[in-house]
Image 1 (cartoon, rainbow, N blue to C red):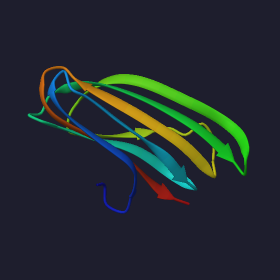
Image 2 (image 1 turned 135 degrees about the horizontal axis):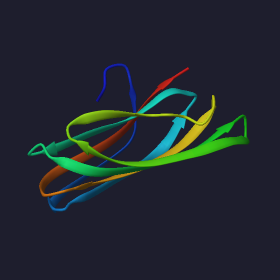
Image 3 (image 1 turned 45 degrees about the vertical axis):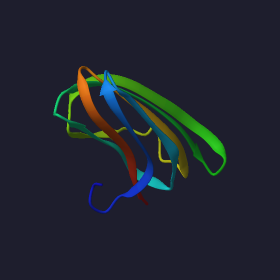
Image 4 (image 1 turned 90 degrees about the horizontal axis):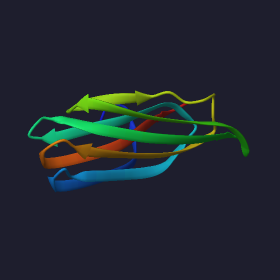
Length: 108
């Protein structure tokens, strides 16, 4: 975990072209990141979705997809200041190995 952050969700997978998924709700988030690791270190395709609300009203959503070299901590950009964000992410290895995805956040 990244120092000072709270775990929102985590997932793990092992194998050839392994896919790991995680999801959860970040309450009063000021920062949300995906912490990604692979053994052995390799590239992976990473996708994420954020659906955020402020006091029960929708403020927007964001999604993205990128290929990254793991391990890495990837910050996610929130659509607006929010009281709650539902976060989901998945990552797929380009080879064989062990994969971990953790969604983390800090609160306002």
